[in-house]
Length: 193
Image 1: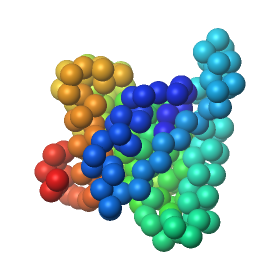
Image 2: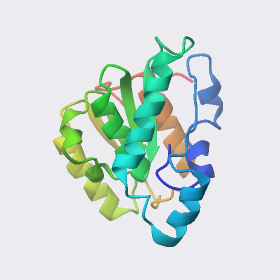
Image 3: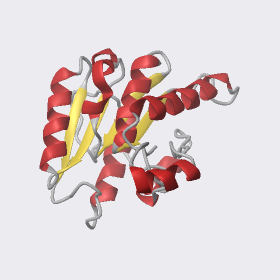
Image 4: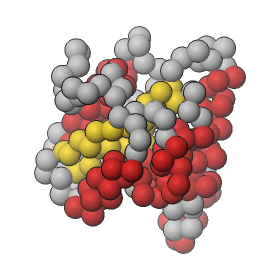
């Protein structure tokens, strides 16, 4: 999920990779803003940092999964990018029984507020090595989390992970985390493929 924009990056780091289509995964992509909101946000930036709005939409999706017979008993892992990461973390805090793991890519966990301390699911924070401010914010958030957490730095990657191989690194790390959330010995790329 992504806080603002109908981004191909958000989809390519999750649903467009072959690992996400394995029988053990069911992947859905969710844009947190409507097309109308997105158009307005491009002019005003009023929605992209509205974590309350974005979180409500993630929580609604988690609740919908709990109501659907096909997904009712399935564990839920949330993948959020940018401000969508804060929304995913807040949803994890508000739905601790349903959400089993969270992956944040280039995220802003600092925008989660007091809910960060209530997150019960293991958290992977993936940050570009060339994104020093967001890396600092993620390291500070990792110190505040009370759950297993790992900060995965993608060498040479900027905030948007546009560099060759950067999104593939994110995808491998997300896959591995969703397969073994909170594993003390977590290293991206170690999980069986």
